[in-house]
Structures are given as C-alpha cells and as structure tokens.
Length: 260
Image (tube, rainbow, N blue to C red; front, top):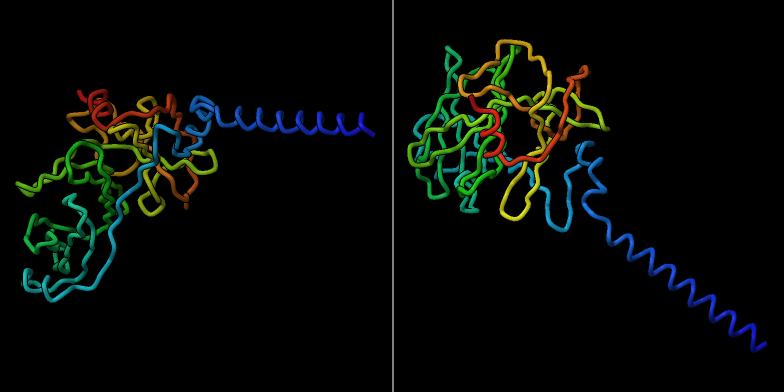
C-alpha cells in the first residue's frame, strides 16, 4: 500500500510538471510563428503591436447650433473627430443642385467652419485613420461613378482648409485567405497595426493589378500605385492579381518607395 501511494504521488507530480512545460512553451510563441496569418489578412496583435482601425463617422440629425452656422439647407450631418482633439466635430452636406454639385461644411466642435468643399453626384466613401505624428487623422477616400473611381489617402490641413493627396492606392480585400478588388461598399476596415509610436499598413509594392475605368492610373508623383490591404466581404468575384511580397510599412515609407 505504501509503495502504491508513493507511485501515485510521483505520477501526479510528473503530470503537473508536463502541463507546466507545455504552458510555458505556448507562452513563448514568437511573432515569427504568425507570419502566415499576416498573409491571410489577420491584423497581427503581439506583445509589441496592436491593431489600428478606421475612425468611422456617425450620421446624426442637424442641430439648431449647426443651422445657425450654415445658412443653406442641411441635407445630412456626419459626426466624427476630424481635428484630433477627441471631441466629435461635424461634416454637413447641402443638397446637390441641377449640375450635380453641393456644398460640404466641416464644422468644429466649437461650431467654427474649418473647411468648405464641393461634393458631387456619384458615390463617395470616406474613412479616417491617424497615420502620422499630426493630431488630426488622415483620410482614405474613394470618389467615382459607374465608370471608375479614385482611391486615395489624403492629409488634412486644418489651417488652410485644403486637403492634399498623399497616395493613390489599389485597395484589395483579403477574405478567407483570398484576395478581391476592394470596392468601396465591400470594405470594412483597413489592416494596420501600431508598433511603438509607428502605424504600419499591410501592403504590397510588387503586383500586377490591372485597373479598369476612367480613374487615375498614372499619378505624376508616383511610379508605383501600391496595394493596401483591407478586411471586408466581397460582392464580386475577382481574378488573380499577382500580388507578391506583402509587408508592413509606415505611410511615410510607402510614399518614399513609390514616389517618382
């Protein structure tokens, strides 16, 4: 009986030791072991990086305060922090006229007009994400119609009220380990991560994507139109785009490597 008790204790200690060893090995998994997951479009979340997502707008009713600032009839209002002070601001649109043109007013949380721009008939999608050291976020925008669209990353200048195109891109959705053209209505989020103070985008500078339509295909300041990867759900089938060398780069690095 005594020998059986000793044997039982020994086996119990051995079993616990084995479980602890497995647990320690699992905790020591390094980022290198999830490189394949990067290529499958999963945002890499490790001890040294976190996923970064779009700052999306929210549709709200026009308020009396906004009507005091804008004398034209307000058709729609989007609420989003576009100044970077963590307080929601407002983007107000007026109805388009007979020429298919309307006005867009960017109003701060303090009800000051920061920017005024035109908006046009056709489709327009816009998302915000902070990609550099400025407090105000950059914008990923698509503008177009049934004949084609431009996909750009733009920088805001809240002093002059003028936005600047930083990069023309090819948007590609990764879904179920397959790649599809990133139509605006199919895009859900951008694949980006933060490491330290840097924001990196999952991208490719080596591809053979063929664009159709009347969109910009040869911008004067770019020699390469990079692929930027997104999450989403495709609504149209897409062929093989021959995309290679997926990698993580900051916006600054992408601009440097793609400029003429």
